[in-house]
Image (cartoon, rainbow, N blue to C red; front, side, top):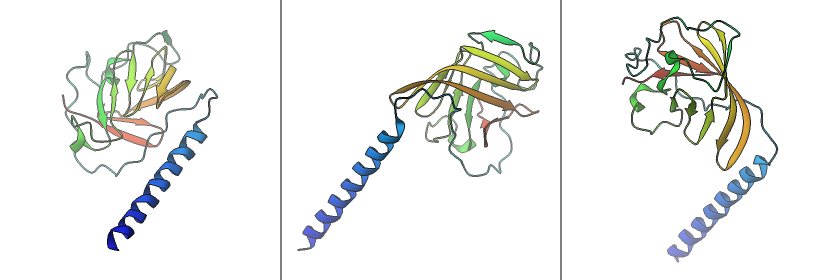
Length: 168
């Protein structure tokens, strides 16, 4: 008799999961999106900043070679923004944090999506906007992503989520 109760509970969980999946698929639609990728909130960071990524061609705190408002077709993303970024430094290099982001010269990789940098606009000494095709979870859309780098170069903010630079 007890195993019948377990089967009923497992069946109910499967029905709930399928319903949630169908709800998410129904909300995704097919219309073109022009929004910024929404980052998932993460716990506040209380650790000391990481050592700058030495794979970047310039130090994160270095001045950008372009001026505000200047655009560059097809990137590249300035070197001060390149590298791996996580909300939690403990997750650096593990791929476990859903906030993980890898910035490369021509694209930005997220947990389940990516953005190609077709147009990079320098908004200020430490701010850029990337525009281009985004893709993730079976969808493609045109999007815009603004990135703000801290003065020290060890924190990168997109929307309301700040990520820390992972050590190389």
